[in-house]
Amino acid sequence: MENILEEFKKFLSEPRNLLILSHKNPDGDAVGSALGFKHILTAMGHTVTAAVPDAAPGFLKWLPGHKDLIIFERKNGKKAAAEAFRTADMIICVDFNSPDRLGDLECLFRAGTSPTLLIDHHPPQEQFTDMTRIDPTRGSTAELIYLMAVSLEMEAMISPDAATCLLAGIMTDTVGFKVSCSYPEIFETVASLMRLGGNKDRIYEEVYGQFSSDRMRLLGYSLVQKMKIIPGTGAAYIDLTRAELKQFNHKKGDTEGFVNYPLSIGEVIFSVLFTEQEDHIKLSLRSTGNFPANEFASRYFNGGGHLNAAGGRFFGNMEQALKHFEGAVEIYQGLLTNSKS
Image (cartoon, rainbow, N blue to C red; front, side, top):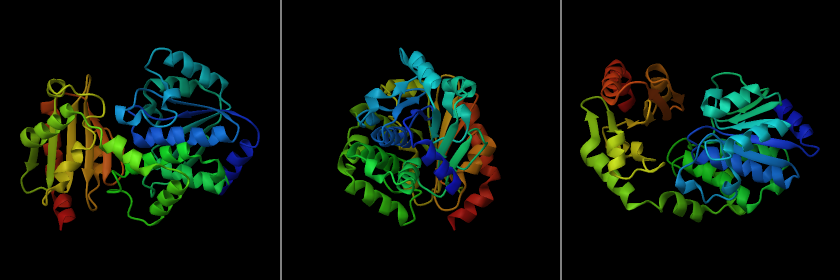
């Protein structure tokens, strides 16, 4: 690890063209990490571009520097991304552990010849970069980037904008400090970022206080009409079809956090949100205690993630996905029961 840090520090000793990439369906940690690191490296005198495969939810578009983010699916995005790959002295990947998470950007990434660095907090799946800085014990990639900046003596380059982006990444990936944050060091990082100008109050207001009335009605419908608890298992789920999402004028990011609500029920330790996409069913999985949501997602739903927070996909219709899920819950009944006690 120290060798990687020294090698990267040496690489940055002269001005470079750098490209930062993050994953499709970018969340707060993906966008916050990419933009936060971009601000830091730009302050050091480097030319930095950040790119993602598709657009982030609307509640993240206020983040400092978002307007300069290359969105590959947008008009001129493909041309801008291709140019960024062509001129990059290094490609820095943040917040994903497999190149297929790059979506349509994966082809450009695999065709690239520049040296590559991965910074991530997800358990490693495959080696696809020249250098890696991975620590699954941390609650977010944004936290890792801050710690990396401190180790490289770059803390003076963390502006209020950079601090706000990184703090947003930490706050959103820990769901407002509810998951993956049971260690004191994370709060030391948060305090440091606030001293550097990270705007905690604005993050909370923009991320958790700007919901639309349609989104609130969709949440109510999901809890009243669509939440199902599987008796005696500790598992619950919510399933939403494309027609139901359309009924409530769904916009990207509107279902963010829905999966957490069933976990507020005393008997529930495992919650899954199923949302119908154009060509697959998307799953968000959350758990409490030691029930392995990531293992469950990997084994049954082409996914993975962290112990208590994971994602997955099912290629079929909603009825098939729910039947597959309930069958898997039966297999995991013993572990679910033990995790409840």
